[in-house]
Amino acid sequence: MKGAETVSRNSPVLYLPNHQALIDPVILLSQIYRFSTVSPVITEKYYNLPVLKWFLQRLGAVSVSDLEKGSRDTQVLKTITRSVYKVLRRNQSIVIYPSGQISGRGYEKIFNKKSAYHIVRNLPADAQIIGVRLTGLWGSMWSKAKTGKPPSLFVLLLKSFFYLLANLLFFVPKRPVSIEFEDITASAREKAAMGQKEFNSFLEVFYNLYGEETAFFLKHYFFLPGSKG
Image (cartoon, rainbow, N blue to C red; front, side, top):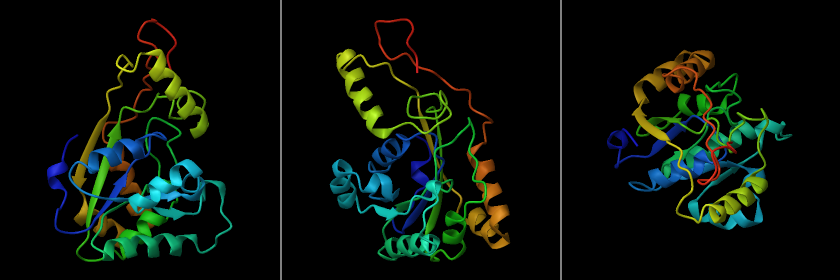
């Protein structure tokens, strides 16, 4: 983890991370909670899962319509921005993914997504904006790298439990993952004032600083040479 010292401890923070895999919100939140509390923005299909809802409510998670599936909620953008501002006005921090979905390639694309742009354009003056660049999960079973399709959370949870047991808990093959925090407050506000296209392009340049990431397929069992994914 790099750059955590740039995060303000005295004002609300808007975290804008890239989204490589289904598991990266868990990894990111676990690192942020080492020095601060934070509320994540979660799509309703995950927020409403019986097993997760209780936990997410206690995190102060904000539930929003699933934009990737084309929600019928025509007011979804207003709902997201209003919910985010409500959290920030309480002097609390929040995480939202500008892409709204996990990456389909080894780089991040925001396309024409609007939520982060609208939030930053009218962000409270005292809020800090932290860009989060996460690398290392492209090629994991939690990403789209192997099939090109979003993996099933339920299936992955079952697989993860099985792999933990098969690797005797302590010998699970480790994947190197890097998280970088960077204060982009001034630049993000400037680009948002210029327009949505300029703002989204700015974020893509930030996330893809190191170029397209090559998929890394890690073996699932410490005692076998193959079986990667």
